[in-house]
Length: 137
Image 1 (cartoon, rainbow, N blue to C red):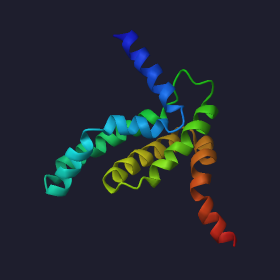
Image 2: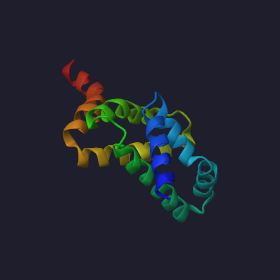
Image 3: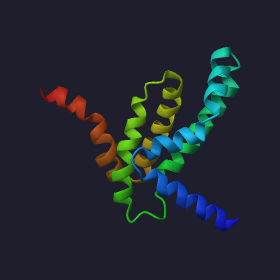
């Protein structure tokens, strides 16, 4: 029903905008698939499980890239969410890191396609800052 979709969208948006919200949402969505899919990929049931894993990560990334209706502005959403997306690239758990990196990559690509200036400012510049510092030194 429409009221349930609106309520779920509102709760999801609220959580994403909190500190650590992106990681919590990604963990929540991928929870349960983590061990099952990763074990299948490692165990050799590989191609089908990897494709399912990729599709799920891709869907989560596209959801993260979409600015929720509850946000005051697109700029505000990017300012709050993009640093959290970049944090997904630094997950230490090797099994979870692969999925988090896939989500971050899809989100980054989607945001860069849809809002190039905001993505450059809030994702690409911070991502490339260490490289830029090394090249200037």
